[in-house]
Image (cartoon, rainbow, N blue to C red; front, side, top):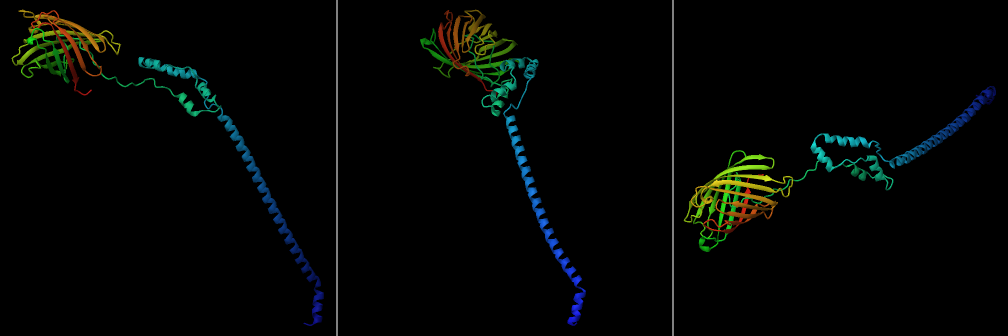
Length: 376
């Protein structure tokens, strides 16, 4: 193409070229403006979102602060508000209708007509804040029935002096006794001592009790002489504070050695035992009466049968006094339990104070220990 032809083409199409150039410039300027506006809008949107989040956070912080203050105010108030102490008092009082047991227990823990609200208010008066531990302690109720450990068994002094008793040893009972006596009219004027040991069989309350005793008559001649006694006994009455027992025995039903101090003798006896102060756990003040008949040691001279009787009184929980008529002479004694929880008894006795027997008046000290080996 020649220059002339190119010039003709350019002159013929210059309007078209100018239009294309103008359209390109306009498109370029529009694109830049749109991008700038879009960036501005995005910046405005981000700023608005951040401002909204800040306002919501501030509002939440204020609400939490208000709720915290409200909760703190509520915590300063008593948590429990009970305005009806009468209802609680009536519920406790109705428990007494069950029986005398709860009535006695009520005396141990009397009803306090005071509301729980008043107790809690008192616990909060110190610092204006609720002391949970103190309120819990105030709300504790003592048990109506208090369990106390069982008392240890105690032992009473003897109330029979120089005569048999209607009561005796049962199954499980063992006893040993040692005695020392003045000479009296026998033994060539020399004092001596003796010992006895025995055990029980059976049950005097349900059927019959059996008591067997061995007696060594002289410690000086230990083992050279001895006698055996037997007694059958039964409790025939046991009501309230009184018991009655009967017994039949045979002293010296067998013997060995050459010292015939005690003649063989059979007897029968009735004994009553009563508590004059049954409601006194320390000193119930027991009293005992016995009466019986027998031969041998219980008779005078050539008589075949003699009457014996006696009484004893527990003047203290550890001390008993008594008198007895042996069928031959008058006896009097004191019985002492040194430690109430130990079955050890010490007896001081004057035998035949009327000096009617062959041996005459003698004074005897006896130490006895008895126990039951059955499990409690």
